[in-house]
Length: 205
Image (cartoon, rainbow, N blue to C red; front, side, top):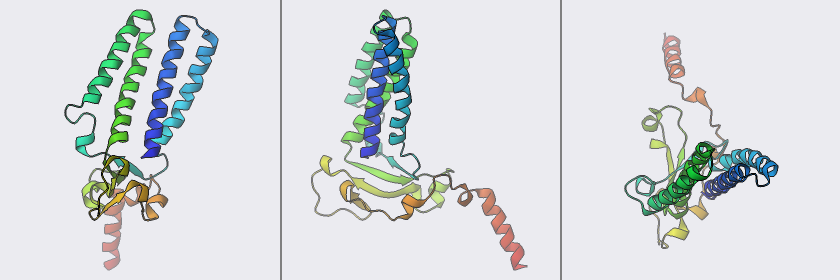
């Protein structure tokens, strides 16, 4: 989770620096430096995204439904929305390149609510990526859920966790979850499964 949160905060910071560079360029304030920094930080955004998306792993984090930003009314979503809307309205009046600035503000809004949700959630699910939707119900673990994780800093200490639950700072997983390749399509392709079944029937004859 720390890696995901770090990636989100990195993207928030980079987004606002890029926004500032566009405003500086528009008002010709260190224009050349602003454009140079803008392009450098655009590249840096890629590395923050790598941290956020757990690149080259077969695992991902899923928040409980009640902790997702748009599941019901959330005060922090409303406040972030108001703030970004106010900045967006002001941007339209002060610069002609407001479409690009608005896109950056929308990205910042999404990153902010995701970062807040991840930072203050008390539990989350560690899941395995599935290539096909039908695999969620037909392969073990069901729904791709490897284990439920409790964030110790956000909950009162429990004497005993339910089966299948672990504290984040004591997380222990089988080595296979770290060794599997994310694009191992050959084990999940339904056409291969049909081919294997036909081959087995032929061999039995």
